Image (cartoon, rainbow, N blue to C red; front, side, top):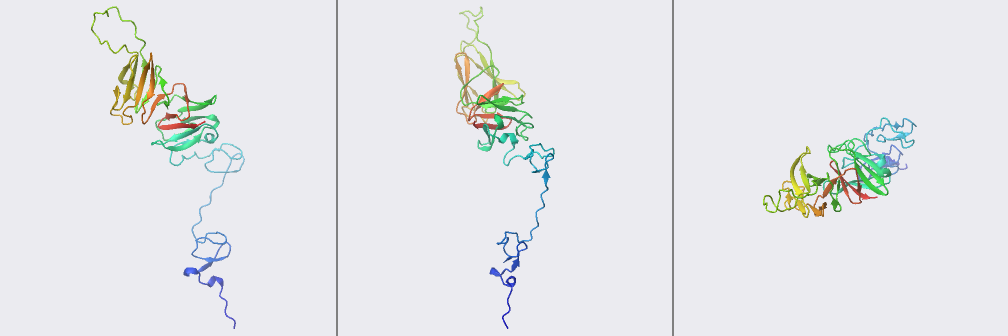
Length: 314
């Protein structure tokens, strides 16, 4: 009698594991393999993932994804669209408008590293906690509608939109101070106020009188340290010919309790009857509040709420 032929399925597989028939292509495969080497089908009896519900556009009926705010086919806004989720590692929410070509901004982390990049679509965008193309819903220090970026004549400007905590631009060059400017040095907010130019001595101040100090000269401006409620606490008077330094432990006005301030942080230099603010090589920089609109140059940082944005390129 001819020898009995043993079926391929009954042969022992390499390593002792039995063979089995692929449920997809009927090929004889090793049952220890997770996938069929012929068709790629999964061999283990893992539970199948639940089917993904099919979503369609209310206007054109074409398939859309759950997070789509607009239909990719007809462009109609989806009425039941889920709000976009914040990107991993950050709290910012960017709309579709902020992904087009335009000036590129970087969101900086606590140690100065770049956490996210995004581009201002059409060269403009509103930043806020609730509304705008760029939103920070978890930032309690940011106003619902905080500030606006806008391009004009090839340059980018930022305008504060009446926010509670203001919009601040960090200096990259000396800046002349004007009456009412607010300055951020470390965690201190200082207000610059003009007092007027020193006038002539009163008639009773004749040459024989010794009451009063002869130096320094008459004060023409003052820096006021502001509390959280906006009231003034301490003050430093400024006079012609006098340059003052601010810092944590060095200078004419020191703030030893402010650990965010450098030892020697900022300088206010007198130039004739004007006063010019300079960063003295501080670690965290010196910023001035935005009144009206302000030019932002490439490399400059802007503080809004608890977020720092840096203009990367145009």
